Length: 152
Image (tube, rainbow, N blue to C red; front, side, top):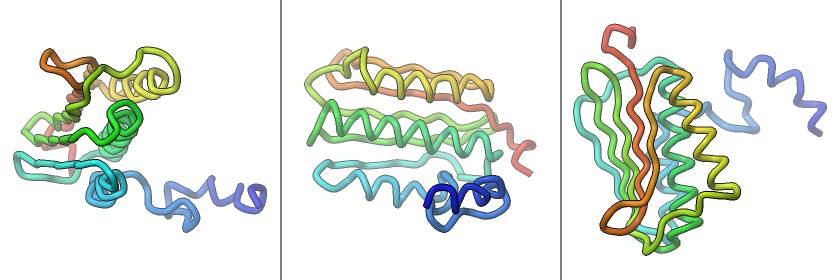
C-alpha cells in the first residue's frame, strides 16, 4: 500500500494527497481545535485582521498549535486550553496556554515535539518559547514573521 502512494508524495505541493487530507494551514484551525475539544475545553481567539500568510509561516503556525494542543492533552488532560492568534503588520503571534496543575516534562516525546516546532519557527526567522506559567499550567508562544507585503 505504501509503495503505491510513493509517487504521489512527490506531487504533494501541487495538489493535496486525498489519503492525507489538505495541507496544514490556519484555514483549518476550526477542524484542528474541534478535533482536540473532545474531552477538553479548547477556546480560541483571534486579534487583528487575518490575511493570507506565506506557506512556510502558515504551516509552521498550524504545526505549533497542533503540537501545543497534543502536549496539553498529554500533560494536562481535561484542563482548559486557550489558543490566541494575533495578526499585525509584521507577522503573527501564537499563544497556547493550558491551566493544568503541572508543567510538561522536559524529556520524552513531548520534548522532541517542542524542539521540532522551535526549529521550524527559527528556520523562518521566528521566535519560540515554551515553559511553565507562574500561576500554574504551561504556555507556548511563537512569533512568526510575515510582513504584510510578503503575503501577496
